[in-house]
Length: 114
Length: 112
Image: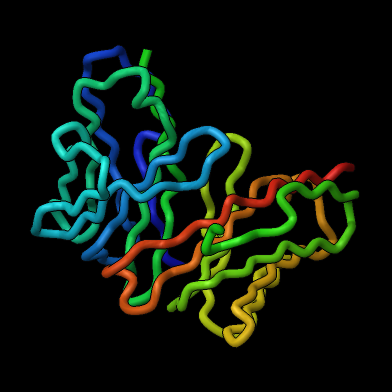
């Protein structure tokens, strides 16, 4: 089956630094990837849609300058949290679209900003 | 009212029991996903289905498009099945044009 990986699986960083999270589709090409975040005991919330070769589309309320998304190839999208603050601490999850209808999720990355 | 409703919210079962988690949705969908989220947070895609029934090991997922309802069944439950199970509805049209609507999850605890 289709596999999506994320790296790192968890990261701790200091306030003010930037952190990059990678999302890879391991055995298929994904023109579109989605980035979600999840706060404790809440459901996943879509942050942005990442399309290979074009700018990401951000959901309302998500700062594009803070959450930089780059979809450089058909198998890799990256999310960079710039100038991270403790309130950015969350669980970040990506998913990759296979074909027209199938969507597969990465295992997630837990970010803790101290 | 959430467009995707799951029930129950919490479920405690004894090892070996047959478990059913329900998901009702009010939107037109292209596909419905069942996800498993472990206590550490990691997410596993269990099923994606648009009709009928799918089976993988002890897990079975069914969907009734007319009734806008899906169920996830776990046979011979085991403590390692303890997790949060999330139902997510994919909107009509190509998934790349839209996102998923997530249920709030069902927290399952299986006691030995």
